[in-house]
Image (cartoon, rainbow, N blue to C red; front, side, top):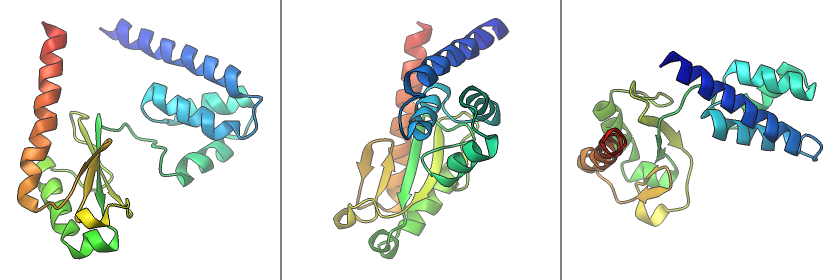
Length: 172
């Protein structure tokens, strides 16, 4: 099993080399390279940032500054599903905090954390522009609106069930 993980990491660095070679001469290439690197690795750990720094001859402090400034980048592993709880004014007034608390209780994680099984990452977001459906959460690209805390378990269960089914399909 250990060999497979190393092989996968080696493949990931080969993909990263291809990405760097493809974009290194383009204007504004750093953000594009970081986005594509995050797509490959799932997040941007320090080692990947260092590798990009060396390949592009850009100081690691510059790369880390970009990664830590933009919220789309993560330096920690993320879950398969990112739950964004809108904390914009309309959602907040209509009970977003209670929905957020229900998710935290259900998953036993805090905002910014990822579940131990790497299935869910929880984020509090700004307005997502669905104020008429307040309070709203997103799970990856799915939007759920007019929520109450009691809606949370069944929504999360749908993702847990889907994930278990896909694991069984891969094993069988």
